[in-house]
Amino acid sequence: MKKYIYLVAIAVALFACKEKNPPIEEPEEPQEPKDTIVVTPPSENENTIANYFITPVAWNGNFTEITNAMIITNSRKANAPTLANDEAVYPIYDIDPKDGTWPVVVTVNYGDSAIGADGLQHGGIMRIHATNFFEAEGSVITPSFDNFQCYGAVLSGSQTITNTGKNDAGNLVFDVTIANGTLEQSREFVYSEHTLRELVGGLGENGFLVPELAAHRYSITGQMKMQSSVDSLPGYEINIDSIPMLISVGDLYPTAGFIRVTLDKPISYKMNEAGFQGTVSIQTAELQFTGKTERDTYGVRITVYLQMGILPMPMTIQCELNEGGPIPETIQYIWNQ
Image 1 (tube, rainbow, N blue to C red):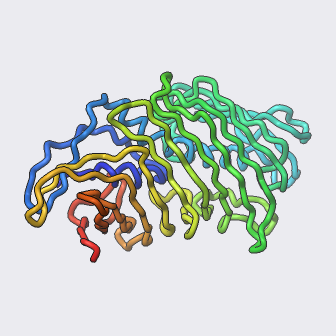
Image 2: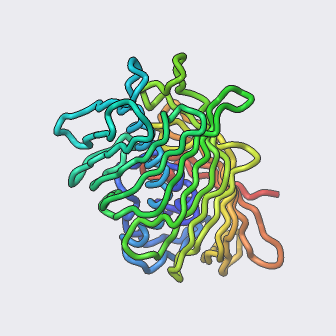
Image 3: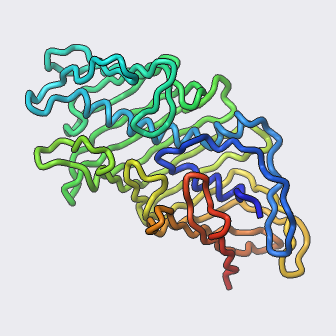
C-alpha cells in the first residue's frame, strides 16, 4: 500500500500547524493487491510538489508567527509596545516606534535560517504593520516580506488580519484574508483565503493573549483556494462551514471539524477491487477530524466519491495521522451502502 494516498495527502496536509520536514518524498512504486487503490503520481519535480502541499501550511503558520511577534513586542505592564528581545539569536524582534504610540512596525529577522514559533523553517525578514494591539477590537495587522522564506522557498502575497471584536460567546474573532499567495518565484500555484478565526482558548483574564502559544485554540470557518497552472496537479477549494475546524497551536492537525475539498478537475485512479478493473476518478472529498488519541496521533474519516460510471460511489477511509501523514497500518476502507 502506498504510504500516501494522493488525495488524502492533499487534504490533511493543508491544516498541519507544523511539520518536521516538507512532504517531498518520491512516491513509492505501488504494489497492486486486490484491495488497493493506486494513484498515478504527477510527473512534476519535488520542489513543485512540495510547494503545492506546503503553501497553505506556510500561510497558516504565518498567522502563528504574527501572533507570536505581537505577544513578544507588547509590554503587558506598561500597556504599550516595547522592544522585547535584543539578543543576537534568530529570530530577532524589533519595533518602530518604541514610544508606545500606534501604529507600529514589528520587524522579525530570521537570518539565513531559523525555526519559527509555527515550527517551520524560515529565513529572511517579515515586517508586520499593526494599527493597535493584536487583542484590540478594530486592529488591522498586515505583514510585508523581504526575501521571507519557508523551507527555502520565498513566500509572497498579501495577508490581512482584522480583529472584529468579541462575538456573542465572548470570544475574539479575527477575519483573515490572503490574496496572490505563492511560495516560489514562479506562479504555478496561487493561494487565497478568507476565514474567520474565533479564539476559543488562550485569552488571559487581563484581556491579552497568554504567552504560551500551545494554549491558543481557534475555531475556523471559511474558504481556502489553490489555483494551479500545472496540468498534472489540479487546483482545489476548501470549504469549512457546517462544523467549524478546531485547531490548537502546536498540534499537527485539527482535533474537530468537517471540511469539504473540491478539485477543479478530477484525479484518475487505477483500481482493482471486488472484481472491478479499470479507471476511476475523484473530484470531491469530505474530511471529519475525530480528535487526538492517547498515542499523540490524530483521527480522521475521509469520504471520497469515486466516479466509476453514471453515479458517484462514496467510500470512507478511516485512519490516524502523525507528522508523516496517514499511518499505513491504521488505514481502513469502508464502502458506504
